[in-house]
Length: 349
Figure: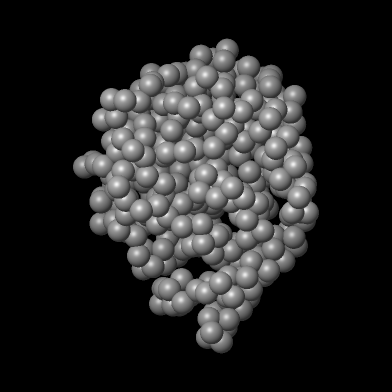
């Protein structure tokens, strides 16, 4: 136990561990060690971000996808998925509602949908920035060319979320169809970083076949990339995928890794994800108490939310945006934090 405590102290001071030290810490975790970690993580989080919780307005604008990732409910092969695309006017209506509720970041998230060409994405960015110049626009639309990423940034996009999912190449291939590679995904992240985006990456916790060594590689990759945001959440199976019968990732390990990420990159933006709230009624609150400082309520129209199901039992699929916002405010206040109206840019620059 003392060795593990020493590793936490080393991480807090140097923000770095060796591969073997990461494996030792992850495999050796205990409930007592986790509580010590969370206290240290909160201390770092309060140092840079106080008790503020930033909100991002999530707009899931298309669930069409050309890819066939084995874990994803909107994979191309899922014939039971009810497909939809939001129109430009619908997306702008979501922004209008969100702005009135105090959101100053809009996240356009969707499958890799060929209908949404670069020109259409650029048009959306221009329209949102014209109506809401004080807001940040975040894109989460998958792997694109460097030229496309540059064009989106030139149009006014501020941030890009692209989870690397797992650094290990063989593990990546076990989760994805032929043609999708870890190397390609990582190149996209380095392109985004060099172009000048505020970059977000992340990974699934407890995905099929994942071991501590994979997570150690993930932590080392994230340290090297030094992103502005890191989104992690437990793997949750979807009934219409090849992984339907696989065990879900755990709340316990996800929270432990959130705490480690906060110590490794104290100034990073760290969401308490919807997936956390899905596997535990107080998952998002526990995420905040483990070091997270962002939540991402859904601004999508209620009639399409049930169709953007990457995994089963996703929460907030029936709530109006105002309900989600009000509910989150109360939840955060109950643990001593407050939701703030701000762009919430990362201090990790």
